[in-house]
Image (cartoon, rainbow, N blue to C red; front, side, top):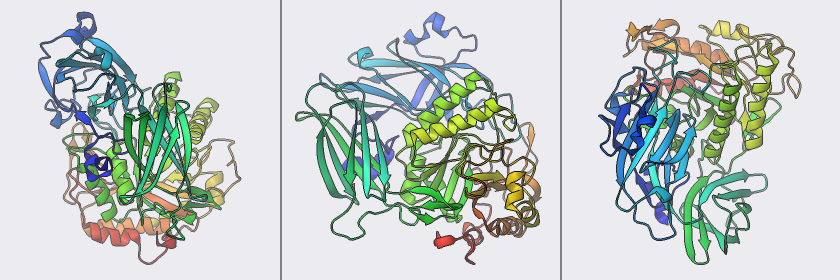
Length: 606
């Protein structure tokens, strides 16, 4: 049981939902493109001789680390590998898990279809026990990833080459593939809702089948390796809630709160039993923290929070959206903190669960953003709502995630200012987030043309501090009209709580192109670019960064900012780091200006 709560669980693809016994299926697979889409008709799922190419899973075929490394468009592809059936006793089941496959796929075991799934950023699982046979088994996938702009794409370009701020797409398997063994009934999900005001944590446990027989749940709660509680309850139905008293009798102030300064985590091991037989055991963790707003402030644990965020798009030069190794995500979190930021806006990507684990563990605030689609239609509405729902379901327990962002800059809803149907899409996503997760803030349309939102979140890439100061000198004018070039709110919309009540933040700015240690010229078919003139020295960059950032921090009603961006990506050279994460400037020097020791913009020294 200790292994479930130890550093060893970092190797598991889901550190927040860990079983002790699991088996990775990553590595070399057989692979084929199916441009004529003949694979199903010809029964490729039954082939035993493999496919003509090889690919390294979990890297998309467009990436160098996949072993293929072509950006050519291939809408249909097939994967195959063989594996030995895990040793399991009678009555146990084998679950097959995929972290993410872009975009739609069918999964076959020994030629028998065991799963169908749609959604390029979402996990899914299948019980493959009925299809298994003793000894050697085959696992095949047929994946379809077209250029459909109604599917959530994020920053994956929908045509050949590169385009402005859109990049090489990532098709097929791009996150972990693994198997786990469970009993005839298994834990499907564990959701922990903290309530710091009442010192409670409500645990909702979902199982995958209706309970049969004498089923019970055992909850073992740990803090820093010490057992705090051990409770047992019956399991009368598939979904069961239990409230844990989080107070520690040995201390007056006994609940350890999670924050960037004190990233305290509680470990929870849930065991499902039938009598004395263990059917399943899962370890998760959570943080006791509260996110709220009051009188124009964002509050973390009932205290004012000033957010210094950086935009992170999660691309690597050799592996695109997949981290090149298990330590890459931890390194990114450490670099963000070394640069003096207390948070990250993961932009247009649902990141690998291990990234959010390191944000939780190391104390980095995080905004979870839905990857955009780009064509307003009924299919887009369905795709976005399905993806947002699954995003919240997967990542509900991560205390570092404090804000959901369903739409960005009216992408996929370009006429939202006047179009009531597109406004309803924003409202639907906002209310969906609130219904699924009342514990976090939601920004309905980050950037401009907002409707329902917990934060007035505007983007402004002005080149100088003087321009920033002019844009936001008058909050009343800004909220009734615009700051830079797009209206702050959609037409005829007024904030639900009245004007000037929501916290205000500038959630994209800067984007200063730097040729320091960087590249110039053309990347692919696109000129290398950043916002405004390029800075060619450390001194020039820091002067511009201080100008715009000091102007933002001087706005009396502003509660934080998000700087664009962490790394260079392909044609974009406006990162603080090169694509390989080499800093362009000294992180310690940058952090001195970012953290701002003079004091303003640092309420409570957070």
